[in-house]
Figure 1 (cartoon, one colour):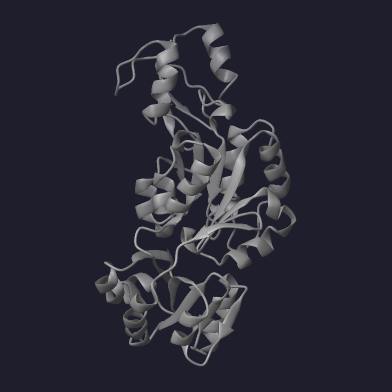
Figure 2: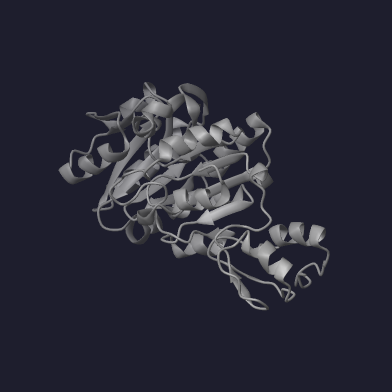
Length: 335
């Protein structure tokens, strides 16, 4: 009943079902261009899976026709701009959804540029039911248990720190395993720093903390625009760091090669779950590698244009419309 796939030319239903998945020809917000035989039985079959059917035309799909719930075993999502709305609120019913997913063998990862201790305050009730990637994957936790962290050598932090200090709109934070630190007392900066770092200290001299904590990330808050102001000034250090924009005002400088994708791979390997069995959601540059580490990669409707180009799919709804939750409800009948 279906036309040949334009990429692999398969025509059988069995092979076509796999082909549709591999060739990215279905999903939320996309149209499938199937030629459907004018048959009542076929129409009824298709109507069983999708809401609107246009015979011999395009089908706007709200749920994959061919994707089985059993295919997805791991889900990862960014927080700000993705799972949380702009008021930093979770979707209604999200905690219940996590428990139902776990009961069906699906594990969930919260991956953020935020500090681990800040993330878990949001999910305190379900802390032991989740995996966490903090500081863009530099710190990984299974519930309360640290799975590992990646430290920056102290000697590579001093030169970029001085460069940050030379940018009028930029403010530095050393993000450690135990705490986040700064010696910048600007009130607006400190307010924003505490939004994403529950353990945050002002210290007299920032380099002193290199002796007392393991620093996993240099975060830079730019009160105007990190992409326009801070990033161009920090590109000279790209050989010593992975540079990732974490929002309009934030640039993260992490250990070379470290990102959310590396953290997600650590969890995939621990659980024996492949990228083809993984789904992820993101909206900004620091989500890029995480989206590349799974087959079912979703850019939020409100995502940065670069992320919209990279992800395999785009959510039908924005973060303010709880796009992550609605996409999961389209995939899993029990939600």
